Length: 325
Image 1: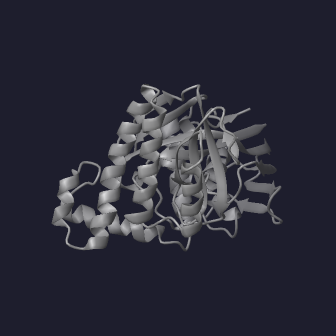
Image 2 (image 1 turned 120 degrees about the vertical axis):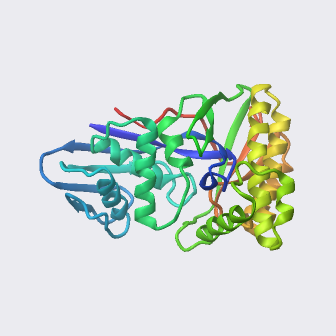
């Protein structure tokens, strides 16, 4: 049997999901695949094409593990797996690129272990496993995108209600991803940003509902800047959806450019290397807009371009949701 889960790239709407805000990702045609057999032994035994050690997890799982096996152990714990699997894992999602390799692994492992809930339940279980494995309080975007994707479409996700809307990508545009620098959210300032948003919400209420002028009540300039990013980014997601619906690629690109500036200045999750790559793309003929994508502190940049543009990087297509094959 085979479980297949795509990676994802976020077109706009970063660092909004953990406050219940809006995001606009798409699943991409790079995949994590588990070729496996189910058995009635209380043991998971998986080999990876990219890691030297096996993941061996005794069931029921304590949720604890080392290296990449901690993701397998956390998933098995969260779904209360009883019967094990044995097999091999391969991936075409570059590890540490910010394209959700860990979320793809979590979702694929859940499917391999026989998870039968809804896409929303699948995503929420995988997210709990991510929290257990890494200790990083990430939002629901990655797992829900991977579990719910539709081929040829990106999606707007409301991370509070978990409602989503599939939006067709214009046929006269391409999405290019450039891998800039390997990163991990563990040990980064990601958790600090989550805490800073919590402080902002204690002062002005839920950021997903807040208006731009509400941040005047925040005296701390850093907390005010974090809140400003989240509030304006949520609006950019709404405007981006409208632009794609009307095939207004220039407006969509302008919003992506604004998003990057906000992430770099107000949220401070970019880097000089990422900023240089984005600036170069934004100045390239045929590019409507470009921005960093994902949690930041390294990773990838994404660009929306004319079909005829010859841009270095991976041309990614919007893939279908995770599934058994």
